[in-house]
Length: 167
Image (cartoon, rainbow, N blue to C red; front, side, top):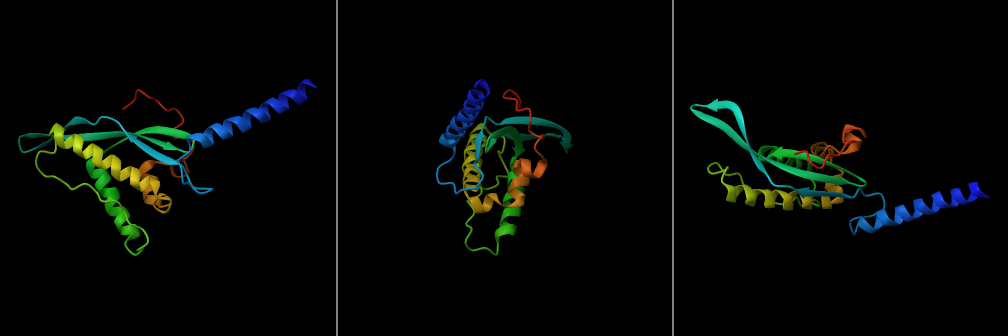
């Protein structure tokens, strides 16, 4: 009798947890589609050790959180990493007229470290990435999955320890 009630309790708990998980799943997903979302954090500048003439190299890192079904992890990339992703996606989908990729923010050659431009870029990159992961067909592309380091590409243990404090 106790074993039966424990079995019922664990089954009941599984059903409740599954229903709870469904409540937070993105709307409009078809059965079998991955639920993928991205949330950007505040960007920060990094001084490099390299010098170009007499200038110290400096660049901006854009940290973000990837939520993939029931898992989540921190990532950070440079603007050039996102630009490379965009070029690879353009190449991957150039012959598929049914896929319309979102517009990528333009490259700026001067003032790329100004706080106003960094904030503008962060918002544009977040909008761009949210549009990419919302498209189920684009999300199937290996290039995007590698960029986001999804578990099917990098393995289930890569993002096992999610640390909220890490950049």
